[in-house]
Image (tube, rainbow, N blue to C red; front, side, top):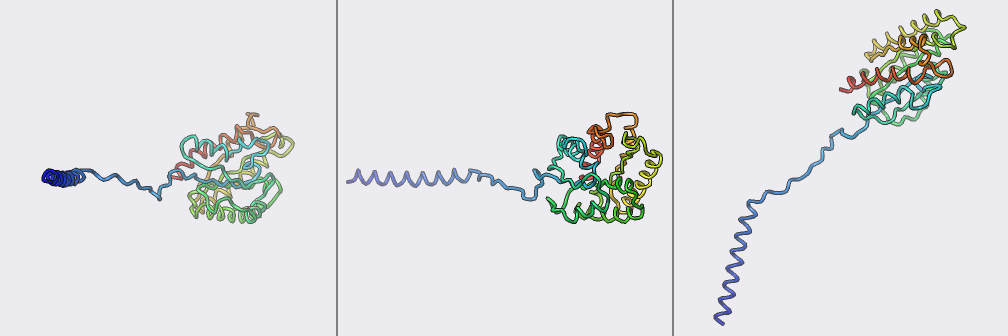
Length: 245
């Protein structure tokens, strides 16, 4: 009985000692760090690009991958600025009025966009539309573009109208008159762009280089090739990162 009692006392004392040791040890153990997630981080969110225009924007007579909005996004993605596929509202033959109607009836993929480009007017010139009408409708289109760019004029890029007088299509036309009228329409869109504080990308002189470089012309003899659109895309890919800073 005495031996049994001694064993119980010994076991009890060992339990007390073990408990004290455990408490002392746990006091020196650092708690496991808690991992937190920054819900405000934009990392991994793709930026969005809306391209508004006509045959030049849709890339008439070139493959989809050669369209200048598509080439622009590829260049940006390759540089580490990640965009989703561009949303393009453009059709061959559209005037400013046609583009307005299309926008009014379009179901947009996004409600707002990080970048919006606007290139429109060659068909106004070709169809003999007045410059006063062009100015009024282009102004409305630019206002809509700014709205679609989160209300930020600095995130809108107006692109000048290319000069098709250098193409085989215009070989039997008055090339001097076409070039002069293109310049007049561009003077309008440039001034409206300045008035609203948007960016302006002048590519008209680049398009005129097709007069001596047939590789810049698409197979239809009127529109531009992927090589020409690559020039525009390269300039946009330089301009857009500065806008997004």
